[in-house]
Length: 446
Image (cartoon, rainbow, N blue to C red; front, top):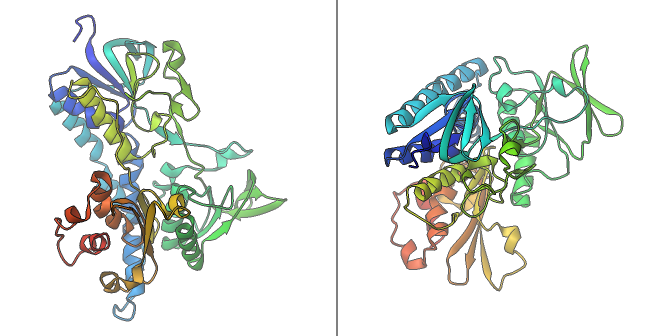
């Protein structure tokens, strides 16, 4: 380290964009600091992935009981207050564990709001800290729809803290958060209305599969208003009203604004330090370096084409550890990043999706599989679902997309074949535990 600096690397933000790399970097002998103003671990452990999947856990169980109603007797009902308490019990110790892990690795942990003063200096509560390199990893936050009465709406964090679930819920938006929380609220017993900005949901996913998931939610009582053109929110005698379309309105008890997430770039001193950014996030090169040579960025705050997901942030954070510790001098090379929508059934994908290649059968081969035809899925009587595998002409798996109750596990199983370009002989070298969802998924690519 240059002796004129307090640290080798300072990270702004304590989420996956920082701690997955900051710990190993400090353990390698570098002097590292992480600055965080909120809970250690950032969004994912505290108000994102971990909390959401805990709230979702009873839903697949309910679905399975429904499918096997001719075998299982009795009815199940979700106790929302107990589920919320369980969620909190699952996540409440995560910040402490992350803090302790970083501290054990030798990271200096600074609690407060950091602002750039120049390319090597961050100020926290009137205290200046300097570093040879700075990494901005401040993530995303919920977007708030800019309409009159927007203060009457709530965000995803509010939803996951509700002590009692409202009887009537309006959800604005049709992305991940909208459909996942619509699935949860509907299963608990709320009347759910989803107001869509367009006529398509989950536009990054294979639309024939998305439509089937939406149709299933509709059968379960979720209402979808396409091209809603939401105009305002207002208080009403018996709740809150969503005004939309051509003088149309709907009164509900609670509004969830699920219109996306935006990068945390304000009040960081980016303009003071001269760091370039757009409305989509901070601009970086192939080394995750900004236009200021000493300042880098990682995680969801980056303006990038890769999906803004925890696995991406983790990969970037670990890449910077390798770069800063001298283990690589190469630009970042992203693997295939899988993604899942935790509806029930789920939708999951990795690599090329069918709509990218359906018109080019000379270069690609598509293999369709009906979930109901798979004997393993028949054991719990799954009837809804399908997978499509995309192969090149040498039978390398280059993409997979599935909607089913276990889509995320199936796609995770296929991930190594996509990332490492296994040929057919190599595919046969992996003998999965049988019977299992892994064996079921892998069998279809050989």
